[in-house]
Amino acid sequence: MSTPLHLHEDRLFPAEPAARGVARELYAEVKGLPILSPHGHTDPEWFATNDPFGNAAELLLQPDHYLYRMLYSQGVSLELLGIPAHGRPSDMDPREAWRLFAANQHLFRGTPSAMWLDHVFAEVFNFTQRLSAGTADAHFDAIGAALGTDAFRPRALFERFNIELLATTEGPQEDLVHHRAIRDSGWPGRVVTAYRPDPVIDAEHEQFRPALEAFARLTGQDVHSWQGYLEAHRIRRAAFAALGATSTDHGHPTAATADLPQADAEALFSRIIAGPVSPAEAELFRAQMLTEMARMSLDDGLVMQIHPGSFRNHNRMLFEGYGRDKGADIPTQTDYVRALKPLLDAFGNDRSLSVIVFTLDETAYSRELAPLAGHYPCLKLGPAWWFHDSPEGMRRFREQTTETAGFYNTVGFNDDTRAFLSIPARHDVARRVDCSFLARLVTEHRLDLDEARDVAVDLAYTLPKRAYKL
Image (cartoon, rainbow, N blue to C red; front, side, top):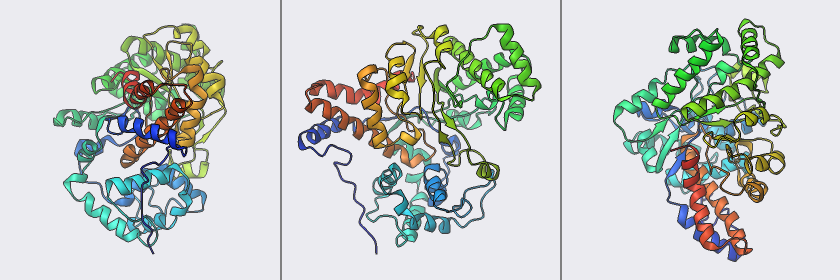
């Protein structure tokens, strides 16, 4: 037996009638604005080749660790979901993987994943029935049929979703062949890259040594010398910028920064290259490199994004069997006040530097991050991220940061997703939550309606465009 699928037009709006009416009015102002997605992890090859997506499991399930981490927590193996092991194609029948996923939809009740999926099914595929064990095959076949049409090729969906810009994320050891193909194709869709240097900065990264070698080949620099290593970063940053990059991205375990004298930095780098590396040395080098990246940003104008506070690949068995980004990254307590001070002492008052700081530690919002961003000209607050990329997380973000940092020391929303079809859904949730928050301020007579209209548009469009220099 199937159950009707219905997206309520007032979802996420206040229950109180007066505030709900204001939220509706504000949402009408922002609903149709173009999408800016300045930070994410979709595959640029999709847009370079414009080949059709394969099937429902390949498109909706297998790129999305939000989905399979929940299933894994309930004893469903990644093998049965068709997740490739260390990049090797799975031999699991995608229809069977989809059936297993469909039969477990109850696990997602109350989660943002359920909202995103319902939006995709209703708005992208026009389904009128929920996904379930009973509708699994019908959904799988209907999605497969749609994906075989030109209207569902990557570029057509990009245009249908009204995406003005989409940024992917690549490492300095990658050759950016797909971004060059997009640029040379003549297609007007704006898909750019972002510079994620973690593999050649984090000496504890499993790819550190081979990534360094690729880094050297691409730049022609002696990356085993301190000056050659820094010059290689400058060369790759310029190459990324030439393909549209406006930002860098740093996923360090902590927010630690350091500003060592040149001789000490060079000596530390020599120890990193020689190995083996102690955890303290690896942490100090990551900290020093955040400051070096800030120094380079002052020269080339790239916006820095710092994403600290995740114990990545916590499940060792899963990491060894399937690799990174398989849903086993866990938030940790994070210090910002002391950790960022060396970088801020060096550059915090320079208005030409732009640093966007994210957190997985919500306790830091009102205590540390909002006060820091509410003071230092270079700092802005990234949106609620990852585990807090949810209606409640977004509300808490606004509640805990607005009074101290205001709206204009934040950068709007970015979706940070690998799941392409969820991008419109995620932005719709963010716009609805922000309109709901603003409606409360209006009905409490803390903000006039005309101001709330301006802020709603700024949060949805103007602030990300300005923050990421788009």
